[in-house]
Length: 113
Length: 111
Image (cartoon, rainbow over all chains, first blue to last red; front, top):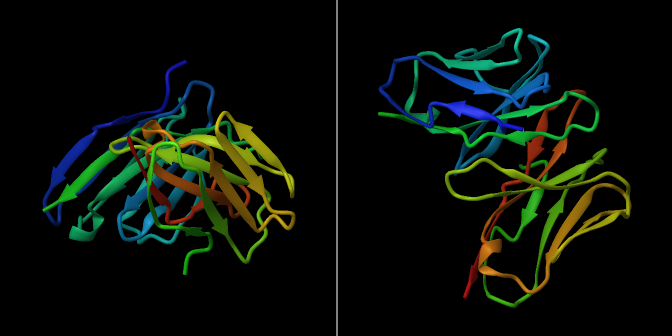
């Protein structure tokens, strides 16, 4: 069974640009969550999508958005990039049930110059 | 202030030593999870503890959930260089998969 796949693995952007990250969950998983990991703030929850609907949202500005497709694949978009957006963005998939067992991808390393 | 406080932040020990990592909160969690993350990779789930007082063993790793479900610990016996990594505890906040993470413990085991 294939794991969670995130593309691309690395990205370099400049301030003001926008970026789209992609996540393919484990087959059969309907929930996809996104996290931002930085040395200063650690792992922080961005949002969760379940069956194409945003089910939970963290405390990030509106520049961070996402969506989920009917095949459960998810994309995350960050507009008007700032230097502070440089981070490892992690996607986690799960069945979406109360057991809440999440499986993480390897992440996308975003550097904003 | 972190909802989940982990200690210590950093541990550097010799191969064969024992260690304990702590994860504490003032809030009650329905469950707590422990992950290990290696450089350049995403966190890998080690265990989920659900019942207050529960103890789970995974080879040389022993996980305990506090009776009041506010704290957890990870004990490693006879640490090996392969145990090196970032250890994270996490718990669900609300309905759905919103996990809050501790800041993590960086473990380095020297041979």
